[in-house]
Image 1 (cartoon, one colour):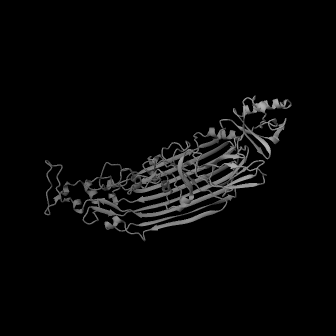
Image 2 (cartoon, rainbow, N blue to C red):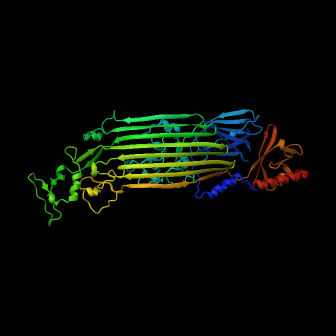
Image 3 (cartoon, rainbow, N blue to C red):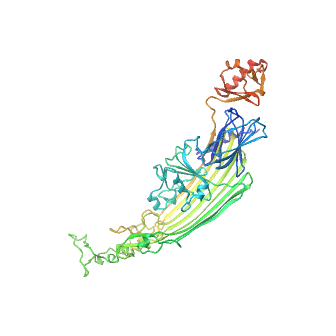
Length: 632
């Protein structure tokens, strides 16, 4: 006959099956606190219900024997908290706003009354975090939407946090995004999380052009938190910051936005340097557009959210390179030039104009071919070649998210993100001359994909499992501006690599006194990040206070043996009686923690020093002494 396994055994099996497990890196929030009666006595067994205002999804738990409750894995947003217990009026706390990775303390007080009565308390969450030692700053949706952002890059808002500085000029020169230096740490010492799973590109040599695998549109971003110091061990492995972001989810109402941001050069003045060099005004045309919308599939149970954002950007970048003059390219020089291969290094002869001349027959044919590629200076009276090449960027990205609640104890979500970017940065010099001075020039074809799945299971009020599954992939390809052109063959250079997969222009050539010509040395490059599976597991088990469990005995549940509650014996297991004479003989001893009156009845709260077993033995001892007929 098949046996039925209890839920916690199934969860334990899942923990054992997962080969690579770690603590979950949570973007969700937690509510904790205690429930007390009007006298300040704790109320064990009270039902606490937390409800999301926008989705009407509720999570329930009960206070433990010490009157405490914990409800983890809550989405950032607005909530109400309800506490109920027999003999008390229902208490509702509204105005509770939870943020990313927050642990909010919400203590509740029950008032004497009927269960049909309701006491409503309106109060915001405390700004002082007393539950964790972490230091950081939450950037909520209002800041994300209201504050100006150049390029709609949410990473700029992290600079509002103390100790956070922008990246180095080196990274800015290669257009690398997600660059933050936190408390003196390097950029690559930071950790980015999205919906609780890893969101780092792990790129080498700046491939992918972003520290993040997926950088969400600000229309899709619910909020994010940058933790800069003393964060929990669950975030681990980083000496820098933890940037913890979360994608929006749908609500019971269909809500969305459609937008387009346009920028062009119609009203722009010419660039200062372009104007000084007589170069034309750089082109500027940027269109950033998209849509974001979410709503219910099944009200109060299943919700969806999706967004798309496109970018079409053309930007002229002023460039200045030092090149030989037209006369120098013909071998005519106004200063002395010596023959390095002749004995005594004599000067070359002069022409009628007094210029030193290198005879054409002394020129190497490969060198002559390279010199012929170099353009003449285009700024009068100088050796400057000024240009304004146009960087062209096309980007398309989208996110899809589904949230579903099976029961008040079991919820799940799934999110898929996709980003495809193609950028071409022309070199400063035309044709095979190129003159690239870093590996950002040329084409950058980047595609990133991220999948996140999450399951939250409240097995019991004291045991919560939170499982996350992450699947990420990044494909990054960088090619030089003249990729596919066998420049070495065109200039007659032999005995160099000619594989079509790596050729792309003329090898880099340094000319003394001028800027180098030819391709940069580190491209083409490609990086395909293999499939990476992560199954972080988070479990939260509340611990008993060191002094042991507290138990409440009400007089209406006691069997009286004399005047006063001190001569009372509890009628059923799980409740504790108190009798003055037997108290001293009980092993382990019981301590009266609280004495109060509830509904006119005496109430005693006792605490055992050795946990449940000692408590039960003490109860049996008291029971048999007070009433031998009940000892069985």
